[in-house]
Image (cartoon, rainbow, N blue to C red; front, side, top):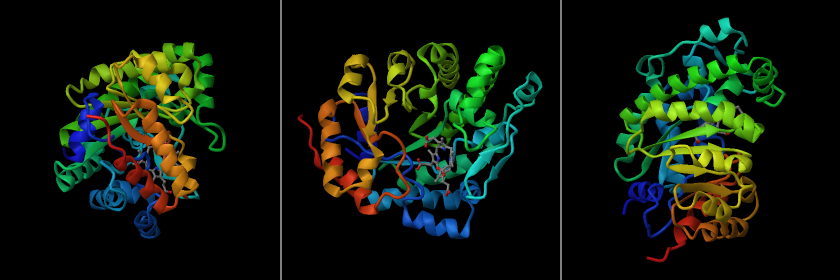
Length: 345
Ligand code: CP3
């Protein structure tokens, strides 16, 4: 079985000889080649130049031996394609210019043509798919509607990005629901284009889902995510839904038509598996801080995570993104440890 086949089989919860592994934020600041490129190019130049984005996406495949390559881009790119300007702050980090939280502000958002406004992302996926061939899986991604709404509405960079979206939830619930629906429809078209360009799977990042109560999630974030999934109609392509701080939302998320639920380090994988009753694969969830410790700690964390699921329907990953200060040898140990665990036939 190729790593790509392993990855796709694990998404379908089929028996596999070992657990497939990749790392959220594997293409980024923990990689020495990325840091060198960032001395010559801005973050947005890297995103918008397919040949450079390809180089960044391939680095963790080559250095770490991960089973899947994620396209190098950012969730905020969709906000820009919808008409908000995307700029770099003084630390070089991307920031969306705030969306005016009024009916007029939401009405000004565009439904964009992915092959025009985000052609560079599609080209990066085409290059990546051609480059890894059928050996490794290629993952495309976007933000879940709630999380992109948080970044669109956030007015104070130092605050929690969800605060202004939560304010709107109380001040004008209908406006928030309308915004979430606009994002859902636009994102579905964007992800369909990524699949057409060669993505083997797509992941939705709902980084700020955990800021919502169960009732709020069910009233706002979940219907928008469902709308996105219905419009996406991904067919045979697996859809992974990542949510952070969302142990209280797991049952609500489990009812969504996704293939894989990606959970953070606070969730017990065994409990989650029981709750899902074998209907969804799980992705995760080693604490990214384990990779800031020792190779031994990494080994133990990997064996513990695989032990919790028995390796069935499990894609090993971190519970959130790779910390930029992670020593390369610890990231390598993470992948090596996962590859070393053989599963019962
Ligand atoms: O996973 C990968 O390796 C692929 C690339 C990727 C990036 N961002 C590159 C990036 C992915 C999948 C993302 C998703 C993303 N972007 C999320 C969801 C995942 C998560 O971490 O919760 C979010 C919330 C964003 C938005 C974002 N991007 C912020 C708020 C920032 C600034 C803060 C920071 O971490 O620097 C970014 C910047 C960003 N996105 C960098 C990279 C490599 C760092 C840019 C740099 O300084 O070089």
